[in-house]
Structures are given as structure tokens and as C-alpha cells.
Length: 527
Image (cartoon, rainbow, N blue to C red):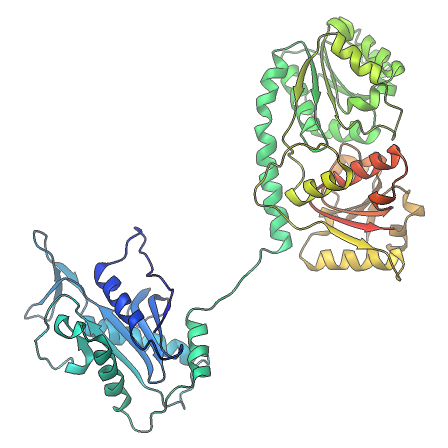
């Protein structure tokens, strides 16, 4: 007989009742010639029961003779004059149990009613249904009005279990006229319903939410670095895209401002500056672009800042910006309290060229190097794809659950506009919210294919003002260079050549910045 599952089901405590285990072994050895026409289910839950909120059948047998339930009662059993049944163990108080014949019959009725209600069986089908009880450890010699000899198996008969089952099947099969045998197809349909086999995959929207939560948890783990940074005067903090540099820069600024000190947080991008302005509410933290740093310092009546924090420092590794930074903080860059966050992959070329001598100067000033090695932004598939395509260091993966595969689409016979429209339609059909999707391009909006979809989709072109309210309420678009330091759950990248066609380091940087903005899902439409 085919057993489902093929090993006995364990209870909540991890055990299998000894009596049920013995019956399981017996059943597995019976009707071995039957070619899957005899199927036994162990420990079947019944959510619908005429007398209980929840019930369980020890065994259900589906075979050509019909459907049969078996209740197993191991150990010693007694029944008093009030028809109350008890399980008896030596040295223990007798435990009340249900009448096993009623229990098996009620379970049979509940199961078959469910099969009828769900159209698996028809009332017109004259199939046999029956029930039985197995007492594997006692000789049940009691005669009674509530059971017939054919409906139970005791210890004496347990050794010849095949004979008991045949007797049980024939007894119920002959109780009604015109019973018909089940075909193999009917047996299989019933079995599939009782214990369906299926694989339900986590939908894309759920994956995105889960990954976002996992990444937030990882980012919170980065708080441990704050203690290192606050206890040292000069820090050079390096890490690839997604390792939490901007998060740590903002949190460090808040932490240092608690001492009523004036803190400067400097970056290159006006977009990143405006975003940081929104997320940092401490009154004595002054966020500025490098170009406006001295003007803002004087406007706020500040001679020098007590501490200097730089985000996306690789954008400022040139002589002119170095001198501006040096002028902002008490003691300058050599003796002042400074923390410089920068990318080991440089991300240069979008603003100014990278001067490696500037990086060496920080090292000469004996800045303590704090490397960030855990990626807290990108899902595993995104991280792996960017690293393999561009051969860059973005830290080690932080989440174990993976995420949606990176979607790569080649523009072929269709126009880029058509391909982009299809991809947006596909993503939105997966219950992804429009405000989770951000389109990135090396081109400005008017020159991009995205602008041609405004009649079909509401697309917000981000600017240095609207970036304060990320994420916006609908699909959004920006140039890659402007979105540096920012991120989105879903990135759709367009109008870039495939990495194998890259010709310059600047093109590689553009790819690196763009692809690393995606948290949970990355879709790339290659030219």
C-alpha cells in the first residue's frame, strides 16, 4: 500500500504514538501488488467536523473498494457501565477517551461530506464508505450493539492485517446494493484532494516587502560603527555602494549634535543634500553642498564647525574641494574632528576626476580606516549581478532570503518605448506599487524614452526639490548622476549599453551607480 506521507507523521512533541507506528508499518506491507490503487494517509486533519471544531483521523484508506477510516487505540482500554471509555496505563490515572467506533464513524462522515461538498464525489456515486478500529495491544473479545466483528482488529488478528482489511472492505461494500468500485483515476483524484501536492511561490510584491524589512534590520546593525566613529577624532570610512555610508553619516551627525556642537555634513550633490536635509532634523547639523559650504557657514554666523562629516567623499577628492573642507572645521583636516565616507570603487567621473593623492593625504594625517564590508541595500541577486558584470566590491551579502532575479531585456525588433511600456505593465501586474518603481537613465527626461509614456503613465520627473519627499506617490524618473547616494525598492534602468560594450571608466561608473541603487528588484533594458 502506498503511504502518504511515506514516513509516519510526528506529533507536535516530535513523537509518533507507538500504536500508530505499528499500524503504519502493517499498512505499508499490505497490498504491495496493487500498483498504487491502495493508498493510506496517516494523521489527516479535519477542519470540518459535525461535533468538533477540529479533528484528526489516524488513517484514511482510499482503494477500489471505497474510502475507509481507521482509528487506532494502543495500550489498555476499558469502558464502564455508563459507556465511558478510558485509556489505562499502569501507575497512572485512567484517561477519558472517545468511543473509538463513534470517533472513526464521525471522522468518516466528516471526510465524505467534505468530498461531496467540494464536488470530488457525487451523491449519485454509489461508492462504499466505512470505518474501523484497531486495538494492536489487546484482545477485544467484547460483543456489543455498537460494533460488528468485521469493524475492528485486535492483537490476535493484528498479525494477519491483510485479512482484516479485506474483511472490512467487503463488509461495507456489501452493506448497500449497487456499489461500484473506484477506478484508478477516481482514486488518484480523491488522493490529490485529500493531500494535494503543490508549490506556491512567494509573489514579487511580498518579496520586495520582506527584503526591505531585512535590509532595514541589517542597516540598524551598522549602529555598532557609530561608537567607533564618535570615540575617534579622524575617521576614513570606506565601503562600496549599499554598505550604509549615507545612513551612518546622517546618524553620526545626529549623535554628535547632542553635545550642542555645530556639525557640518558636506556632499557634492544638491539632490543628496536636500534629501539629507529632510532626514536630519537636529537644529545644529548644517547640511551643505561643497560649492555652497563657505557661503552657508558665514550665513549661519559660524566661524568654524566643531565636527566635519563628508558623504560621498570620493566626489571631493580633488585639490580645490580638499582646501574648502580644510577651511570648514576647527583644526582643519589634519587636526580637527572629521569623518570622511567614501567609496572604494570611487564612483568618479560623474562630477570631477578622482585625485588619488588626496586619498593618500588623509592617510598621511593618520586617519583611522573603518571599512564597511556588509551590503545593507541590495538583495542577493542584485549584489551578485552587479559584482559579476562590473567586477566591483560592494560588500558581502546581508540577507539570506534572496529576492527576485535581475531582469535583463534586450531591445531588439521593438522600440525602447514599447519595451519599457511592457516592462512597467509587467511589474505593476505583480502588485508592485507605482511609487516603488524608479526609472533611471543617463539622459534627461525630455530626451529619454520615458517621456514618451506620459500619456499612458503618470511619471514624476524628480528634481532637487521633489527628492525631499522620496518615495513620491507615483512612478518616478531621474538621471543617474542625480540619483547618486539615493535608492529605490525597484529600479528600471534604460538607455545604457551592455557592460561588455563599455569603452571608458566613466561608462563603468555610470553603470555601477545606476545598478546599485536598486534595493529589491532591478530591471535592465539594454540598448
